[in-house]
Image (cartoon, rainbow, N blue to C red):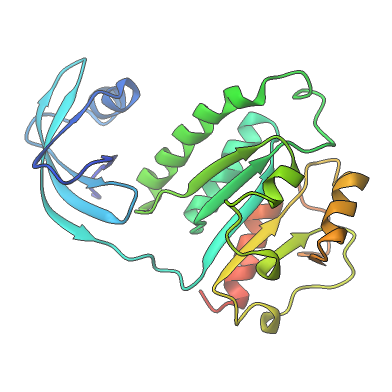
Length: 246
């Protein structure tokens, strides 16, 4: 049986104390761990370690940490997904699958063509839930590098942010109305790849004009129209496959 994995932001000290109530509940009530049980600790930056539970209470869990090792990223390229806010459950699903596939960075933007159920909501209230889902997905999938997640009020703000990794040369639009499919020779010489996907209703005319003005390349990723939560997952898989990651 695989050891439970625990996110520990600091692995430098021999003792780590966790006061995250949800994490405590999961370890104590769901996994039913006890003092003396072993866990695998990771800091989200590539370090992993052996941990042993020293004390478990309703308020905190303490671990003894040793054998700290550095785990390198198994993927050759740096992948960044630029995705819209969509319904919470769908967005969390998409984030979880992107992490399982090895995404390095996620930029979440507020689309102009917004789902009516989100139109009057304060989307920033979703962000803590998304960050919890990201950590949980890393714990479950074995990913030791927690992706950077950043949030933007619109696509334009996102594209001109210093959080955009690849630059416009390595930035692609995955669009249902594109005329061609991406080929391996278009990405093999790139060290980092960023790709944009749209919401259920598609990109707005203003967003299209913005991307066209930046002369971004647009590609189809399939013969059928994909849901907003599915498109980035399939897109990442496609880029990785063309890059020879699998």
